[in-house]
Amino acid sequence: MHKLETYTDKSLITKKQNNFQVDVYYRVTVDPEYRSWLKTDEEIQTEPGVVRFEIPFEQTDDDYSEILARAEMGAQVNLITPKGTNVFRDKKGVQTVLLESHVSQPLVAKYFCTDDIAQKMDHAARFKRVVSLFGCVFYGATYHDKTFQTPDWVDSLTRGETEPASYIVANESINLAASFVETKSGPVFFTRRALLEYLSQPHIQQEGVLVNRPYEALKGAISKKRLKEVDYFNVANEGDEERYADSQYGGYKAYFVERTGYCLRAREYPFAGKSYLSVSSLKHFYSSENLKKFENAAKPKENLTKIIKKVSGRKLIK
View: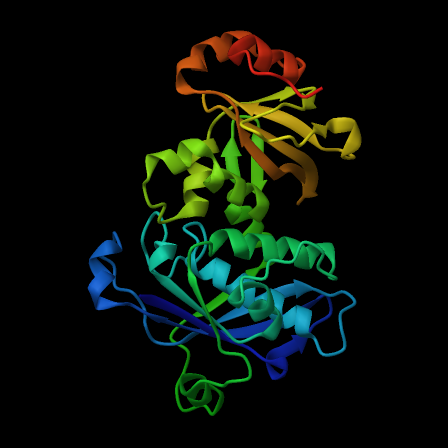
């Protein structure tokens, strides 16, 4: 399998006037057996490099563990995303099912190397957003906990015996912008929960096809589509008895995605003077034969339960 190894520690943090600058060393190893699976003829850099990851200056824990974890997760996301540095050079991004992620920070290991995706993390909202993005981008990858170990290839860099082959500047805003899905109704950002719901949908499971890039597949399913806002996210779907009413979720709204059968539960967040939709839930409601019927029936701001009943005849939650 291909490898992406990263390392950082407290000695690599520099406090500036407005932010923390954290140097994250990285190294890529390409597995010769799967080299042809990377759809690129470009040379892939395997010599160690460094990502200088910038994090806004704010209150943090005394041991800087959150800052270091955010920097390491952020560096790894930037390194493999198609709109980021994309060190594996594949236009669609490296297939995560063929990737090993080696991490050095205990907080990263806590939430991912043990697959312990905590629902109630005692961390700030910004940290949770980074965790969610990292979990989406690396879904399907194998994790290796390298905490409290300084690899030999890092030692040679810190001692000045070797020079970094590349120098990259990145930050959380760059990562978020690169992870946006552009739709005809504006940018959308997917959380890990939405990705898991996408992968668990019956129409995905029935195809029986291995999704080698789960996050990119999800983004592709929604990209360049138009979103139609509806009043309520409140339906029964194949035994799903959850009820999502906008009035109960403080700012969350429901959107149908044209020509797909998906309905998103999302809310707006500001970003760089604009706003984007953060999707926290994703459902699939109707079969392909009902697509035309649905397109004729769905109207903006129409009650969602009425639309579903009109199109599919499904029994609604009382």
